[in-house]
Length: 155
Image (cartoon, rainbow, N blue to C red; front, side, top):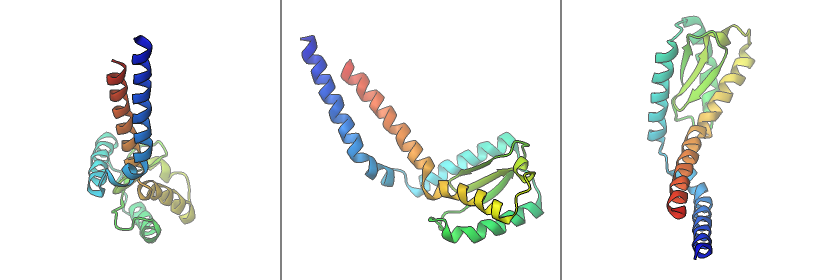
């Protein structure tokens, strides 16, 4: 009796995994809307700004905005806003979230030329253009669903 229950559980789990694998391409494209993606981006942006503050430097902001503006038409998603914010932290980093590109005050000290900044900003824009955050959310949701199904199937 125990072996039969175990076999049924394995079959059910295999069926669920098969459905998840088959549905993954469709899910990655359609389950999170652009509006939802941007809402998550706004929440992440608010958290980063409250955590680090904004480094207000009009000269840097203007320089980086010019580079960003030249890249947007080639981003793959030119209809998405790419609000540029400099975070007030000495740690050199660049971060993207849908609707935003963050660079840190620490990045400003790296002596990058315009081409270097184009690379940094373009890299961050690519995360948004390729919907990396949405894909991460999809994988997290699929993992949660899979854990739930495994818990039910295995009793």
